[in-house]
Length: 253
Ligand code: PGA
Image 1 (cartoon, rainbow, N blue to C red):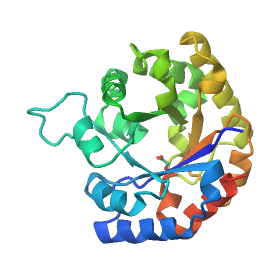
Image 2: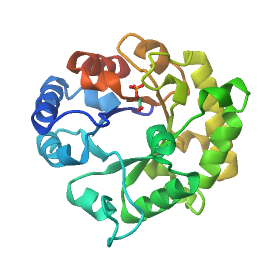
Image 3: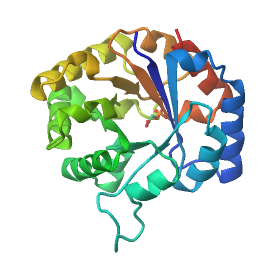
Image 4: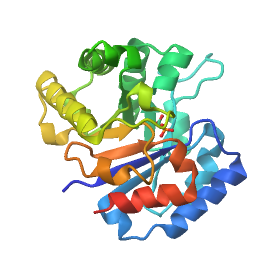
């Protein structure tokens, strides 16, 4: 079985000392054997990338940024470049998170620019997709996701799909305590994999889809046991030492 992938998305939380403490705790409590069946990736804020990166060096845990800009460098106040993230030791970047789409106005086309540029630079991409509650209620889940994927991956060579992980995060499940039913999530994951493999002509086994949205130590077992769920993207529960370690341990079967 392929390795499960567990990503901690710390969002806009933790000062440097807090991030260091949490990272030290994670590194000191993950057994080498856990990392044989699970890939663990941490996504702190920009200011914490360097200190967290120093702690996880040689631990097998990887570093991920929460955002990137699509230009090489220049007059883009407040933005961060792919080279800057690589310089800080990031191997991954989260792109298309719903909090950026809906609170900050990121469009599918901007997301596409970010994905294309990041892959070109050698960053691996966690590509977030998912529907809002009104779209779900109107039965539009798959249409919304197909559009996000279709535009988001425009111009991406399918040879680069090894460097992309998809994260299905129903917007109504993020930070709400409401999780999608595991079977329902797995079925959406199956449809996402089928659509991408057919549309972009790549083998379905290459497409990895994580679930995100109120994942915690109580619901991880039922989610991770689903065949189409290749791992999880964890927000709130990744800020809690005990919960996050339990999520990792439950995922390492
Ligand atoms: P949550 O966030 O686990 O707090 O719902 C997940 C995410 O937004 O990536």
